[in-house]
Image (tube, rainbow, N blue to C red; front, side, top):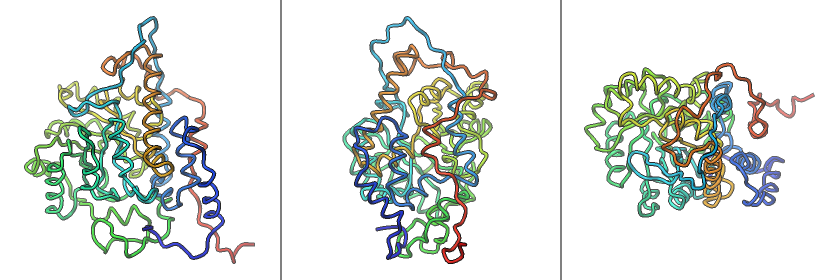
Length: 414
């Protein structure tokens, strides 16, 4: 079922998308994550593209999340035996084939009829962690049922204003074998996501979280997040810890001060993220925040048994390595897997994962390391992070869609 009312008439854009779908490149022609984004922009429905790709306001943060990685350069070592490279690591105590995970995303069915089942199946086949989102378009129990033996899932939680509903959700997630609860803390309301807001009004017969009284006139984001409890505060962690024995992590930390508080309140870790640039525009890039967080935690001796993850803007294996060198335990990736899923299904997500793994292997070999635990700040030049100028990113510029102004009515055009 579509989330939007479609007009009976087919637009030229709709017709072109049908042509593009028929003639899309073979999966073998996908050489990087940008390729999936390029195909998605030209094939998936506009409502899906607008919801997936949108950032807040002027989308400065969305672009800075990615650009920040281009201001860090490597300091590679040579004359080392790099014949064998291992990319495996442990995340929250569970072994995984690579130091990245599929980050929580919403409404996968906008792009593919099987929705997030594609992500679950691909994650299982490739042995990477999947973080299941509260706003997944497939019921959580179905995604849990789709796991294979030994597959790790985490759960991203929006705390509902109905706390009893939140309690039942946490209890069920633990019962069904999730290995961690990631509480989103940067979304007391949806950001001003204008691309999404220009989408068509959501059907009244589509069920969205929070009931049938949500605002459906401003795109998907507003409709599905208006139930989130804006009163959520640090003391609520005490209550949540009485409900579950699972590791509790906070997703949406953006300052060293809050990172320290999370550790002091007994959390098992944090995710440095600004919601992919979808919340407060001009929030700093997570990579920049990471460079402040790790020293602050170490200064107070809070970095032990406390895992720091990061997401937002990652498109290459080199991006992942930079984050790990600066102290991140793992890296979350969301949009690229949605684009791969929407255009090529399970096989697309697998291909995207394999591309990242391949980039990790080649980059680690060229960097002079053979395992993830060897990575550290000695391999990074960050002295000029705030002053370094880098060439334009041609691939990013080609897939990024600038914000649009409102169209004139056809009859009013001169």
